[in-house]
Length: 119
Image 1 (cartoon, one colour):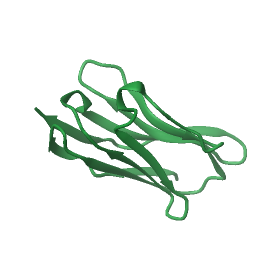
Image 2 (cartoon, helix red, strand yellow):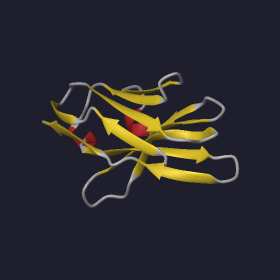
Image 3 (tube, rainbow, N blue to C red):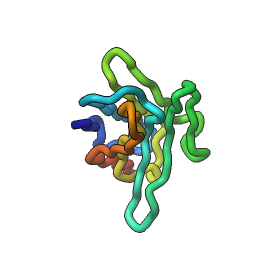
Image 4 (cartoon, one colour):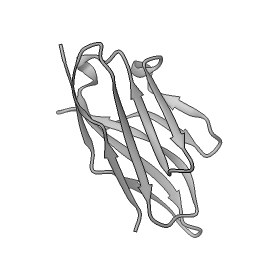
């Protein structure tokens, strides 16, 4: 059973920093893509940053230059370092992984972690 467990959310003032982490556990063959999404009240869930199997990382325009996505292969962990946070970054952040189990690709989601940025 694959699980994605996030940690690191919280309350921070505008201009501050937070680091989110996501640990992937369970059996899978390879990762097609892994990343972070976020959802604010009344808005659709949006991609924040992700890394594809070719190692390329993509960021949504609004976080480019402020957020850094990283992956620790040995620990099966991905992280999102968020700097210069703005009130509009307030959202529930979800870890997402598209995994190949040798036969099928399946998409998994973490439970989400709240990030609140006060002005």
